[in-house]
Image (cartoon, rainbow, N blue to C red; front, top):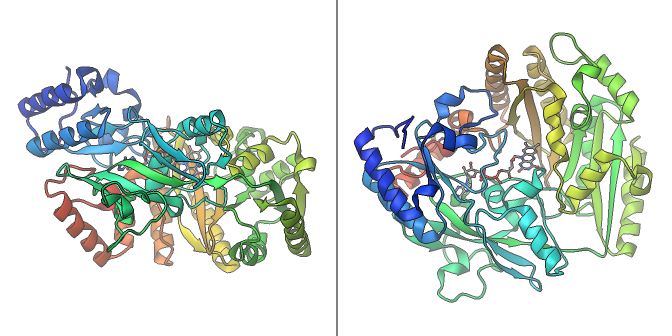
Amino acid sequence: MSINVLPPGVSGKNFEKALKEYSAIVGPENVHVSSDSLGSYQKIMIPVEASEYAPAGALAPGSVEEVQEILRVCNKYKIAVWPVSTGKNFGYGSASAATKGQMILDLRRMNKIIEVDADLGTALVEPGVTYQQLKNYLVENNIPLWLSCPAPSAIVSPLGNTIDRGVGYTPYGEHFLFSCGMEVVLADSQVLRTGMGSMENSKSWQVFKWGYGPYLDGIFTQSNYGIVTKLGLWLMPQPPAFKPFVVRYPKDTDIEMLVETIRPLRISNIIPNAVVISHALWEGGSYLNRKDYYQGEGAIPDEAVDRMKADNGIGAWNIYAGLYGSPEQNELNWKIVKGAFEATGGLVQEEEEMKGNETFEYRAKLMRGEMTLHEFGLYNWRGGGGSAWFAPVAQAKGDDTLEQMDLGKRILGKYGFDYVAEFIVGWRDMHHIIDLLYDKTDPEETKRANQCFDELLTEFTARGWGSYRTNTAFMDKVADSYGPVKKDINQKIKRALDPNGIIAPGKSGIYN
Ligand SMILES: Cc1cc2nc3c(=O)[nH]c(=O)nc-3n(C[C@H](O)[C@H](O)[C@H](O)COP(=O)(O)OP(=O)(O)OC[C@H]3O[C@@H](n4cnc5c(N)ncnc54)[C@H](O)[C@@H]3O)c2cc1C
């Protein structure tokens, strides 16, 4: 095997010995070290030099027992592994680790749907299961349950997305909230089942989240305290009627008023799903080409965005939401919702009117948990394949969102990048998601994108706005923004559970 990168602090001789032991566990065909066979594990969309994050190799176990055996070898040689489920954390670091020389632990071969309970609306899945696979299972078995998936839906993992605390667009869109019970392999190879799953022969692992005593599931999300090998999910019963709609507002500053309109509807669950408020540049960016509107230097000017809006009938802000329930419930709620938006000058458009509109159709699909890859069109907007999600949290209050938009737009503009953004409304919070799109083939632009991301983080942090999630290059900086006590506790738990630091050092800024 031709070795390119050694794990830090491990000699070539010891690494070779470890590779032999890994091969004996998973089979040589599931151990990768040469640059050729590492393929996608080396690709990274965020604005950094990929070689600084190069893996020492990749291992693909097929069972929990193999994961346990791998961790024994890791402890023996002090080699770190970075677990991925389907490894498609695009814009957050893809399948690469937070530091150079880790072994990627690719769990895609562990892809069993262990159980779906159609009556209770629960599922138990392994890391490699994709949303598409789970959807197919439901369709083939005629089970009327809906999934809630992130925009890359078909190709990504419910387990991977949920434990990185990702979001979808149905009423179950806050994914971790709708998970129930985990199986975790700890660094010492013990297997923990959380919640009711700790009991032998438990019958309620996927229905009661809390178990007894301290609730542990949270510490295995966005963390490096264990390798999650099973996850329980709650699935939504298909409602008798579903009514998706879009509401458009013409000006950027309308964000203040429209958030004030949405909040009471959302908190009272009249609109029950994770509403998306998509900016014109996200809306248009997912299917239009930037150079058709602007070919000059710097960020696209407002005048060009206005032309794009007018040509394509899109708003400065485009709200996608849905009503879920019986036809009678939806009819009643529709009167309330439509009335509220129209009273503040929103243009309300229903499904019949939007038939054939690609953007409406992909949003409607996401709001009923169906598969679509339409949003990848964002990468054609500017071209060049570079992307980094900046993801600060705002209160669901008009003034907070307006200030965040102004600040985000100003900093992006300073570095010559467009404000391609959306807000995803939880109940009381908004995930403000900005896609920093840049040309990764241009080293100067890549450097500029890195500096821009850094300034966004600095300035948002200074105003008390924390990020809900970040990419591997900025994990230390985001961890710092949450203060020294949180950092100290994170580290103490790490040292207790993983004294050799073999699981994903650097994840969320946590080292041992
Ligand atoms: C166009 C586009 C749109 C997107 N839209 C959304 C969206 O709507 N919502 C959203 O949430 N994301 C979105 N994303 C980001 C991302 O692609 C998804 O979150 C995706 O689900 C993450 O990839 P994955 O499921 O393969 O998880 P993975 O990459 O496998 O896992 C994510 C991270 O979790 C950790 N991890 C994974 N598995 C384990 C394990 N078994 N044990 C311990 N730790 C583990 C690792 O740190 C890993 O890096 C989008 C990306 C793109 C390109």
